[in-house]
Image (cartoon, rainbow, N blue to C red; front, top):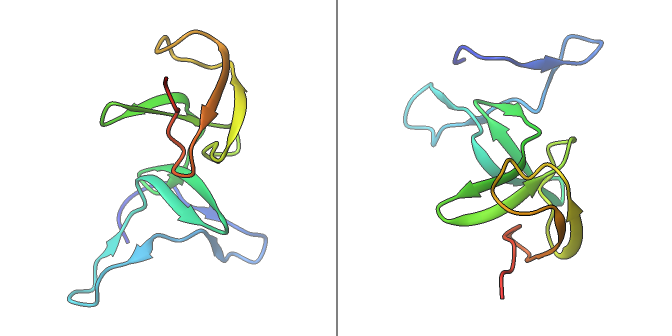
Length: 101
């Protein structure tokens, strides 16, 4: 596996291991960016579930809660803006993008 930070449960089993490659080789792909899993969206940096607050990806804005979950399909008050926008209530689409009018 790639060098990185991983989480293990009390039995020593890895929690949320990186996804495997396409089968063409033995390497694994480390989760990065927004990943759909367990019925929601989550934000990973180098395979680690990460809290980020407001982030910008390819010109679109997303809000990542302390749990690493990306807000989607609702309106949500954001506080950790990272200087990208003002604190406030914003609406997010199904992909997690802020809907700006």
